[in-house]
Image (cartoon, rainbow, N blue to C red; front, side, top):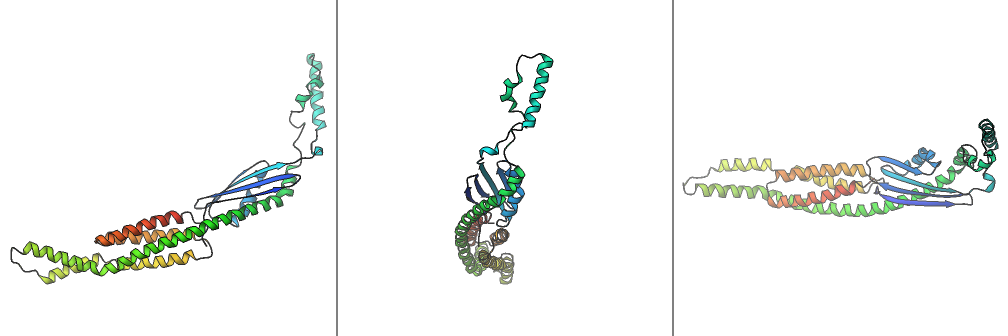
Length: 296
């Protein structure tokens, strides 16, 4: 089953105390890379996010965006009386020492903004530990939707790859049928060329030399092995498409091998019709290569 490396998935959770949303975007990459953008303190869970993602995704860049809004109760907000009293005592001392006319209590609003006077509500480590089961559930839901989109795209890609595979096979079949005629056509052209050159001189053609020349050409331009290997690759390509796990790396390697055989056929076969078929095959293989680079 093919899986696309691109896709999108999201999931949300809401309660009286918490609103949470996770968005996942998958992009192409030869290896798995997880990028996390999250409001504090959830960025501390990046390692846990990656563990969950790795269970379902093997290749690609996964961009995770987490949005969170905590709904605090009135009793969650506390003033640190010890810190506030310390600041006030220090101000009174300075007031007396410097003879300032400003009463320290008059700057109470500014004191509340000083570090430690009004701490953030709640306990961050405890909140993360308590909320992780909810965060994990939302992440798994988003992953499930991401996988659904990747499967749908992979199914469409698989159909297109099969169509291209059949297109290549048709042109390879034409090349296979053309192979016996290539040597005969070369022999006839060579015979005609020599006959025209020597006609005025009334010289007989040495048939053994002609046969030798044709044999050398036939050996150098023989593409039978390349055609057989390319046909075998096409059969293997279809088998790989039917594998239960997404076979992106195998398809990439096999596509490279098919390109190699097609190039060899094109360089060895001195025939216009075969060259045209090779052009069609290489054009289809280029489309195959673009597609398989997006397969997990």
